[in-house]
Length: 508
Image (tube, rainbow, N blue to C red):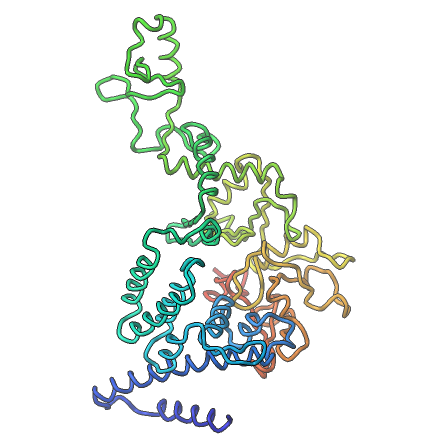
């Protein structure tokens, strides 16, 4: 094993030492092809090595899940670690409880990857195809489909393979009869992505019929014209498409809430003459003139309906009063410099960035009287002393931590404050204190990685004079980094990478 690893490293070193500036085009292309095939083949064999290391209990003593341990060992994101582990199970031979060998669940794909004939993008297409097939599809059909797609993958690009897989899925389940309620329900999801360059976010909901019916109820009731108009800050005249007084002095046709139009005609097209008296017609016309026309589009009203339903639920405290020690309220933070300049971005406890102008609006007048907390920090994002004699942090301390840490402090972690817990940098059992200077945020996954085992991480506070003084330092296990040099999380503090973290207060 040692000789094989040494030979691999030596081969890579030999390739790296080549001076290819004068190499012919044919040799360069051949080198590109060979290196790509070699990388694919190594990836295929790596799936087997990873799965066998898990079977051998390589991560058992870490106290972590296999995905957590692999993420810390290779410095990869947790989703990527999970994908690698699951992929290794699909592409590697299994054994029964009696020790008998079983072929991989994706044998054709595994063989093609080890041959260097396909890439991980091809594997992802085939894996997605098999996962999205209904459970009603029998095993023999699945095996034949996987084998056919694996053979095709050797000859075509992932994009073309994806189209072929879609067509094959349509043939297998031509009329959609293979799906059932449980199958449809497992496809449900809710995702928020963004922001884009305009500061807008995109929310995507995939729901079953029950979920759609519930959303329709919210849309039809709270999304009707005029229902949530005032609470969402819209006013007449805000829309370019609003129909008001026409240029010829005639009043535009506007439908009122009682079904009558603003020109005195009823909803069925008949005039009020002869059906209502002159006095009633005058009253209806006055009501129509006083009514503010809803300037929103149907899509905007639907959004406001869902938004209003959610904020009303929060305002009623149906979800309780706290979550992970933080109030279930809108919690915002910004620096005093950004607030004074009315520029820059604020941050919510859930990790959403919003312009300072929006922060001022939300902090001063949030709909449905939802409580709002605003934390303002100095230029250094550092807390003042706030101590407690008990082990658990107080609500005030958690709010102060949100204002300074914003989220999990593990390097590269994106978990916001609402998905973290308070961690004693020096463990309480070892004499640590519940003082704000020695508390930090850590998500559940990374909090479990703090231990004294061979793959354990450690935390300290950067001392005065350190480049990131006052910030939480995470020290990796010696197996991953023999120096165990402390690292900080820049995800919630991107300005650290763009400017001096300790600017001179007197400088510009």
